[in-house]
Image (cartoon, rainbow, N blue to C red; front, side, top):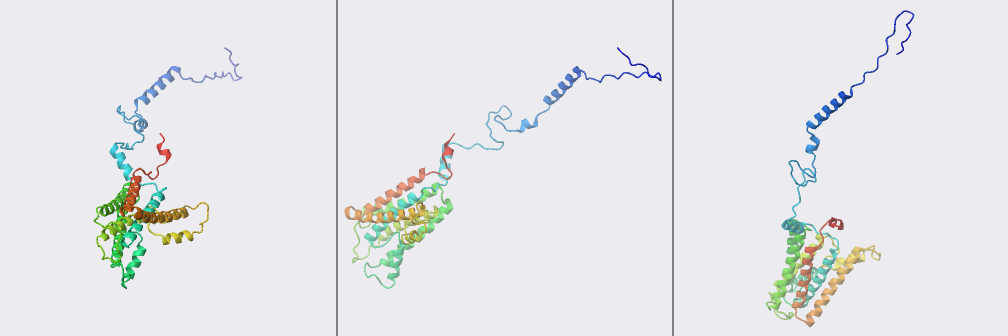
Length: 323
């Protein structure tokens, strides 16, 4: 070991001591104490963080801390199905079918009883003419028109308030509405088949048969349900019972000749459906019984009613079926 030579003053400078190096054994003991303290202290984050397995050896699966699992029983699934709102896509198809029904009903009603059931424009004219005693025959035509118009207005009030109370586009509401319309047509057909209402066209010179008012009222009542459905589904271009305004809207459309124009297509389809329905009613009256038009109308309404059962719900997309 070498020493520095003494300084001229005779003072010997002490050697610089080596830096203190902590003992490896002390480090290990400190680390062990720290780790022991960590293990002994409860981990708050782990304790309260929700995971796939809950505390207390529970096997309940949890996705979030406060999520309630959805009830997937048969009853709850059916309940959700009928409480869901329907998707309005392609709902113009059942309304065009209803337009055909409107043509059937009015074709039969006017041909057999001299009064409209769906198109209240004609009944309004007959009612106004009745104030001056016109037309001379059939007698009391204005009375039948007044009853049909009154029932139609009452039907609109009933159906629109029913939709508002139960949910405008709820599946169950649409089914109830069209079921009522179907029952009204069924009752009319049964009355004619049982000859409670004469199954022959009315003689304009004969006294009025007031029992006809019952059939006219039933047909007018179901017509009110149709037009309310068109408003609920926001398809005003398919009123199902009106032609004049529909033709005007069609002709004033600035995109009348456009290649893609859904509203124009709906109006044309609705007009043709109503026209074909009235023409069908005339043909069936000549070849079969009077009730045939009503039975056909009832069958079409029943198909539409059953269609709402399986109609796609609102917001339902293909991705919803992916697992």
